[in-house]
Length: 105
Image (spheres, rainbow, N blue to C red):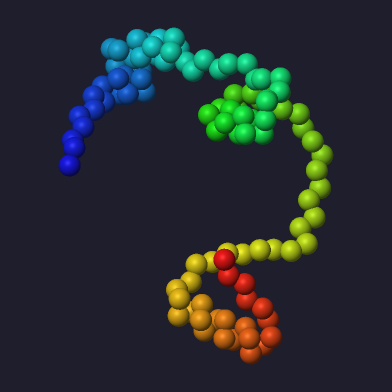
């Protein structure tokens, strides 16, 4: 088993305003913020768009988001539950008796 030693001092200094290194910790955070690149005008493909959003957050691009008025009318509900094999077999037998199809994936 590998062991890792972590110096918690900088974290304590960041959150404890009485720590003598507090102001330096705050300054470090301010000077090392994540740089957010521009949002591309378009993507070459859906795959490229997916790759972009896999590594970026929509919260970084809130100024591009627009409110929409959407109504969702849910007609049917779908539930998936995990059950053991014996319960599945018993449920399948019962479903056949009451003539209700049981689907599995």
